Length: 399
Image (cartoon, rainbow, N blue to C red; front, top):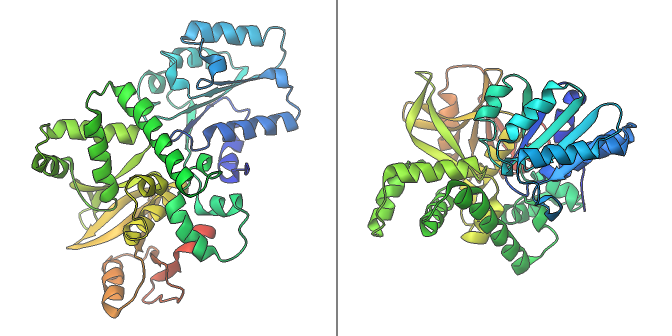
């Protein structure tokens, strides 16, 4: 089943037929190709002739022979011979073509091309492309299915809370939904191995594959926990693994670049500065964690913190971890430089837990919105701090 990923389509719509390049970035198999196809279908529905639309997915065998920009240009020229009007170019996983940015720049300069590209590397725009086209592209981050999309895909209309627990384990990779139990676990592991091989090992010419696996497992076990490359170094040293802190830092960057993990920095809310130690890391999708190490429900507090973090990214927030005195605010979220503050917990089961979660927010000396998100059904809002059930947060646009 394919669902309309309306949230992303609505973000792209204002730029369709505008002289600006549309760039979709996200982890492999997160649904970028489907979104491109939905844009194409929309164009055809609006009367754009099929022959004016060129779509190339560089991961399909049909296009394996296109290995450089000259061959790509020749292919496109053949496709648009005698075609009149604007040409719509859709390039899927374009990073496999060396110097692709030069050709895109050339088409952009001709003005009668509307260009859409996808890539599975967050640094797709960090080199020559950004230099060529500064201010001439718009970037949209694509994530695996949200809980709302999960509900829509499975046609669920009731008992959302029990399905939320299932979502904790299934994750949001849409290509895995047609499988069940052990088969699904194998599919997710194969997808994980493909991402590690194509987007990390091959792209960065890594020889020590075992080390990559060790570091990734460490991150999975420690999502939402503050740590540094130095902490991983000390842990691996106990296992007689000889490597430098700088190598570990590079490997963490490779996983970030592949859109597999996200680093969140700490912010001193009193000094208004970013702190350069003990960052946190979150996974793009928890289905990988369940498949590789299991225990998502056992580690539910940090798992739902991960889910809230990714949902906040979907909603276009810039996010840091807040530090005030010796207390921590899970997420400081900003849009247009206006903050909101969020604490995440599993259940507010005691007065001590309530005090622990609400106290950091009470200590923040401003009047911007403050929230505590948990799985409780009873609303415990007080002192101007709003308490939200996580299922309501995920299914309703309250924040």
